[in-house]
Amino acid sequence: MRLSPIGLITLLAAGLFSAEVAVAQPCANAVDQGAFDVAALKSELMLVALTCDRRDEYNQFITRFRPDLAREERALNAWFVRAYGRGAQKQHDDYITNLANVGSESGLQRGTLFCSEHVKLFQSVMSLRDIGELVSFAQQQNYPQPIVLQTCAEARPAARKPLRTAESR
Image 1 (cartoon, rainbow, N blue to C red):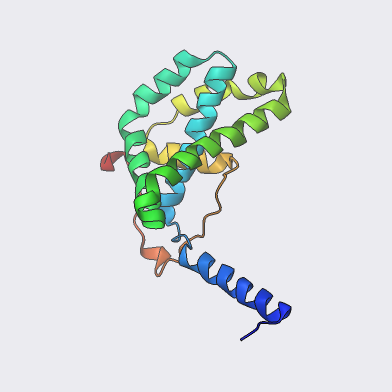
Image 2 (cartoon, helix red, strand yellow):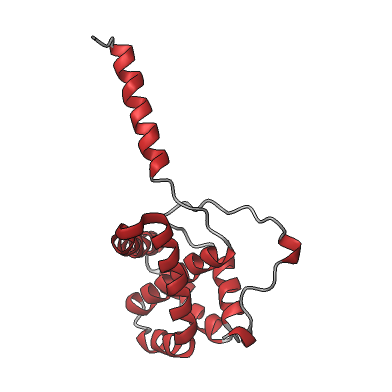
């Protein structure tokens, strides 16, 4: 049986579409999205620390929020495991690398203004009281993400309990 050029193109397109469906990412719930936002904030703070010689402030941030950051990292890992199975670690590593690259590109575009615009970020995060405030702050920053997340539909959003509180730490 011989395929016409249009038949071949249709077959190839169907194959590509079905391959894409097979590796579709799971949706991201509020905890997942918070973990991605905190990862972006942490990456931005690291960029500021390295670019603007603010390593001490970055270390203070890490020390203060260490248990919370570890919990957010576990949530991020869980999403990558759901999304990529055995390939999760590579995809997670690629995400962190791409996140740093996106931040660096943004910093390069701002040039000499970058440090003057961003050093106050450490004061802001150090004034936060708990992980709930840190997640909320990270979400408000709206840092560019090198990944597109599909938000999960929630069955009963009104009945949802707070995800993170000072008591849940």
